[in-house]
Image (spheres, rainbow, N blue to C red):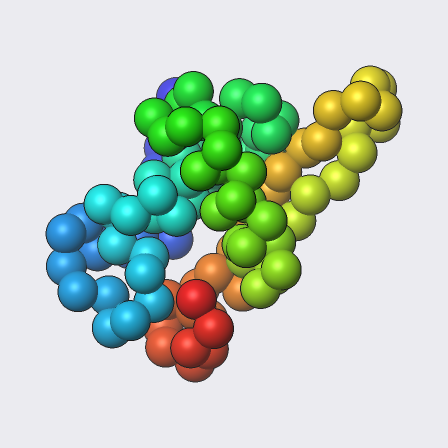
Length: 104
């Protein structure tokens, strides 16, 4: 496993704390999904629920919301057009965590 980056470390420090209304504490489903995604460069939509430990329905709802606010980016897999690849928009997530955006 790769060494954790600074954003992941900062995110993990929120574990169980009141995150100022962002809803991004690690105990929320959004938090579990984002923590999982930060540990990987990219994941397929189907892999995220298993790795994050959330239901498929919850995962898809949260991914839709996170994509709408720009925290994640979803693209078609160039090798298999039936699959979607999901990546974290680290700049947007960082600005959301630092309180410059109250959208989450």
